[in-house]
Image 1 (cartoon, rainbow, N blue to C red):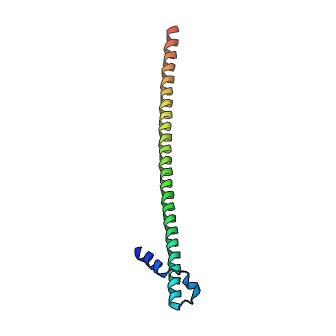
Image 2: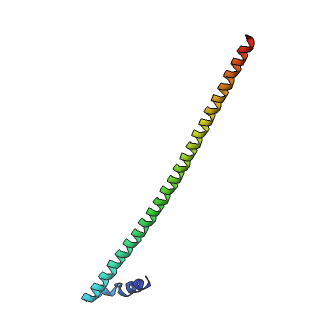
Image 3: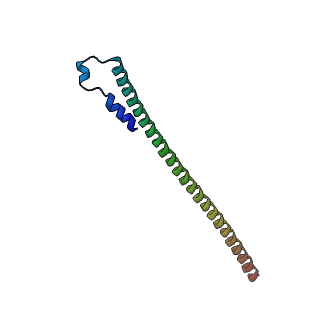
Length: 107
């Protein structure tokens, strides 16, 4: 990277370019600088895209983790509802037995 900056500094066209005609070698060198500056901008854009993609991936992972936690909580709720239903069934059975016992006593 250091060499690229050094090359850019050497080949940057200063105000004397406007007062004299540039040689084809100078034009070529300045074109090289412009191309490489564009490449550097492209690399920076690619880096930002990569960073954004990484953030999106991380966000998707967090969403997946959150969805998993929600699914687990829903499973626990379903299990609790099943236990409640089982408990209500046991309570109903006890109540029915109590009624039978009560009816037998009154006979």
